[in-house]
Image (cartoon, rainbow, N blue to C red; front, side):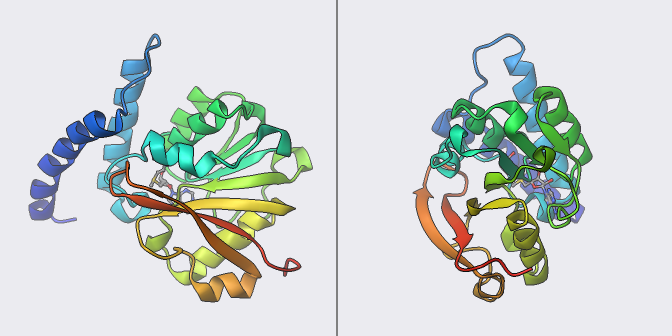
Length: 229
Ligand SMILES: C[S@@+](CC[C@H](N)C(=O)[O-])C[C@H]1O[C@@H](n2cnc3c(N)ncnc32)[C@H](O)[C@@H]1O
């Protein structure tokens, strides 16, 4: 990004941050060390966004409201959960709050600093610094299949081919009735209809979350027919 564009975006970023804390009540939890942890997360997000705006795909971390909406159908008793693009771990915390054990979480994150931070924060979860589109050969959950996947990736920024790789790779780790929950800032499902149909998947919108910057929609992707390899 050019210096001129950054000059305008940086103060905007700071203003958004203040607005964000007030409106979405995204304040640090009241526990020892929570403030410094929260500050580190915000800084890491800002640093990652500046270095790779397309790969991060958002100016601020997802809100607790979006995290609650994207994880609301997940039940710990159904089985392990795969999380793609965990970033600061806001969806991870929502999954833990729903009762999912750290041991039942695999967190896939490409950014090195985020992956390191996730491994420190969630030491019993399986953290993989990897590309979410290349998970087919990665062993997860000791051979068990996941019941669901939660996706924090900026899918609208990815070409159709990459979206298809990510869906194929994700569903290769999901049980037959498993679902992948993802979000988008757009009005349609971020996975192209062509990719969905080629992979035998279908998409259904489950929620619209206004308390997020920008507002977001949650989509649920499931298998339509027998899985095609
Ligand atoms: C919108 S951000 C954030 C997600 C998280 N919900 C949050 O609010 O902190 C998207 C994340 O996906 C990661 N990411 C982007 N492309 C990826 C890929 N191909 N594989 C794995 N992670 C990826 C980025 O590093 C970033 O942490």
